[in-house]
Amino acid sequence: MPVHAASVRFLENALAGWAREPGAQDLRFQVVYNGRLARTACARLHDLAEAYAQLAIEVTIQPSGHLSGWGSLRRAQQKLRTATLEQGFTHLLFHEVSRVPARRALQRLLSYRKPVIGAIYKDTYHPGYHCVYRFDEQRDLHCPEPYARIASIREPTPVEGLGFGFVLIAREVLAQVAFRSGKFAADTYFFYDLRRLGIPVHVAPVFARNLKVDAEPSMLLRWQRVRRSVLRATSTADGEIR
Image 1 (cartoon, rainbow, N blue to C red):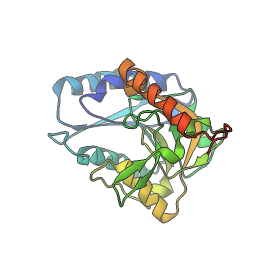
Image 2: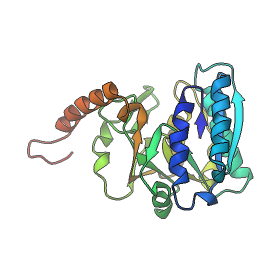
Image 3: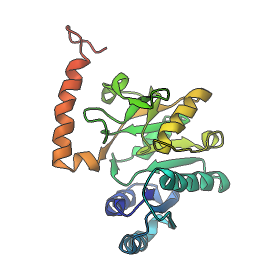
Image 4: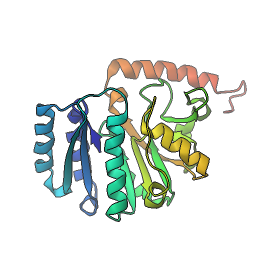
């Protein structure tokens, strides 16, 4: 769970959800604080780690002094990757604290036995779409249009890219691909690199709420308004989905 000063406000909600999940005592939770150092946020982080001591949370303060660019977040993600490889864990689950997964979401992702598989949630930056996309490196462009109807799937479905909001990555995949960032965050380049290596990526019919959209009335209204246009555009005259 990478967090920074602004996202610590979502952390308690995420930890409370995990505390209710069966089998949570068998997991190892790592929270990595990145970005500009904020005393109040750091104190809150440690208070929450103590309040949810049953989750065996390891807290790392890894400030960069700024929040510009994606390097700070990437370093936090890389720390989690390194811990997974060095400590012998079978999987790394990225859980952005502003995402609220359905009950037993992790158990369901594990049950599909895929090398990389994630949940579906509303995209913060592309209203009307979910955070599943194709990345066009030549044009530096995310293309969510091919996956306009992804929320209707009923079984794990191959995709080219998705966000790190709630995604499960097997250890053997992490051993092959490191994280890099640039104009975009590490998830963009990670899935692009997996595609070049021929490593399959799936999304599951497992859903999460994106609090940056679902809990913000103006953002949600905008997302829903655009969504109606997206659905109309992706239906043929006879109602079949393209």
